[in-house]
View 1 (cartoon, rainbow, N blue to C red):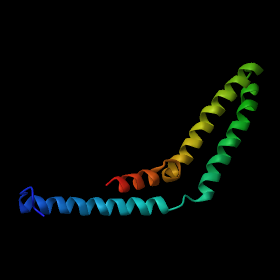
View 2 (view 1 turned 180 degrees about the vertical axis):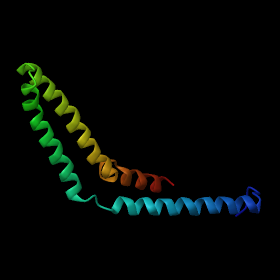
View 3 (view 1 turned 90 degrees about the horizontal axis):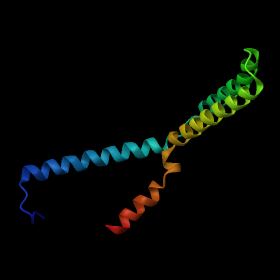
View 4 (view 1 turned 60 degrees about the horizontal axis):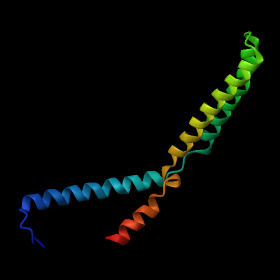
Length: 110
């Protein structure tokens, strides 16, 4: 097994590092299997929608012209709803990214 003449101490250090890597991979897998509570996601989305729906009313009440209110509300809504969608995707990265297929490809190639 020691065809490259690696000293025993370095073999043990590499074995410890591989064991730690395996433990971290197992923890990551457990984290990926833990679902995000649905109530958390719903609460954030509903609060954001309520805030976005009251934004034009408050803007017109403050004296902004209607066309600035419409454009501003559309822009802010697009930005915040995009961030909300991105946040939902980041909560469950393994469903968005094709990591399972990538890992299977790596396993086949080795």
